[in-house]
Structures are given as C-alpha cells and as structure tokens.
Image (cartoon, rainbow, N blue to C red; front, side):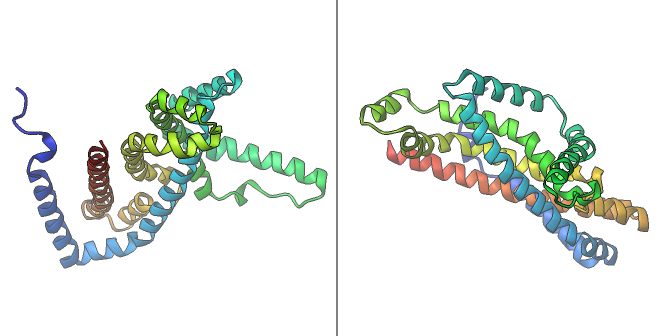
Length: 267
C-alpha cells in the first residue's frame, strides 16, 4: 500500500523518541559519578574525532573532485587512471586500508623521502616521526575519495548537456563553464549524498582506534580496561557518536529541504 501522505510530511515521532531517550541518557550521565568520570576522560577524544573527520573529509572531497573531473576528461589516459583508482580503492575495506597506509605506505614514503634527502644533503627522518594520527587521516581520505568521486561524477553528469553547449556557443571557456554553469547546478545533486558520506566518516573515524589514535573509541577502550565499567563506558561512547551523527543528519535534512524548496521556487 502507498502512504496517504509524503513521508517527509509525517510528524517525526521517531525524533520525539530519540530526544526522549537522549534526555534520559543525559540525565543518567549528569547524575552518576561513574558516567561523569567517563565523560571527562573522553572529552579529549571528541576533539580528536572531530579533527580526524574534518581534515580527512576535506582531503577526500578535494581528491574526489579531481578524480571526477579526470573521469570525465577527454583524455583516455586520465579516464582510465581515474577509473582504475576508484575501482581498486572501493574494493578495499577501510580498516585494511588503514593498516596498509600505516604500516606499508607510510614506511615506504619515509624511505623515499630519505633517499631524496640523502641526495640533496637534508637530514633523514624516521618512520616513527610520521604520526599515526596523520597516517589514519590519509587512509580515511584515500578510502572515501573513491566514493566521493562517484558522487561528484554523477552530479556533474546530471547537468543538462544543452546548457553546456549553449555556454560553449557563447564563447565561455572550460573553467567559466564549470564555475558558472556546471557546478552551481551539480551541487544540488551532490550535496545530499556528500552529506551522507560525511556522517559515515564520523562513524568510520572510530576505526582509527586500531592504530592507537586517542579518539573517542580508543579512549573508551582504555577507560573500560582500567575501571572494568564496560556498560557505563560504552554507553557514553555510543551517546557521543549518536549525538554527533543525529545532529548532522538533521542539519542535512533541513539543508536538503531548503535546497528543494529553492529549486521549486526557481521553476
């Protein structure tokens, strides 16, 4: 059976339930000494998680845009190279990519740098000088860049070909066409799935704990191992992630609705 009203017009009872559970969980945290102690311990991890997500996603989005442009290039070599990268990276689990970048790619990069440094007379560095935090960020950026590249590619291809041809007829160069015709229209298609990828990276940032990066998950593991209060500790960890992801999801829903209304007014 088809719903009698559009799903986005339903009263958000699910949100009421989530808010109710959130208030109850927050009350438990603020009135329990164990919960307060755990939350105080995890505060530094929140900052690390936010830093990893923001920097990693910015790098991934930049790489994804370049990959999307290359995949739509007139050059066969660029198209094939972009497709090769996307298919390879998308087939590797993020956690495997984290381990590979941390313990294979990073040492190889340091060895290459030291080889060049020896030729030019610059002081060499050690592998341990390459922080695990940045190895994790690079791995997340590489992993997500392949998925974001497909988002950008689909968005760029959604622009009406007739408008691009009209811009060419007016004498607009490639950069001007991209800046004033293609990208402003493609961004409406790109933003919703791009926002979903951002929320997904917030959750996948927890995987950096396998490298010992002191994010929320790693600090939660250390805290639980020291006080043996696994129930309270992982309740707080889950609450922090839920707060971040639900807040972002609600913001993205509002942005998507606003853009849809603006598009309807424009038509």
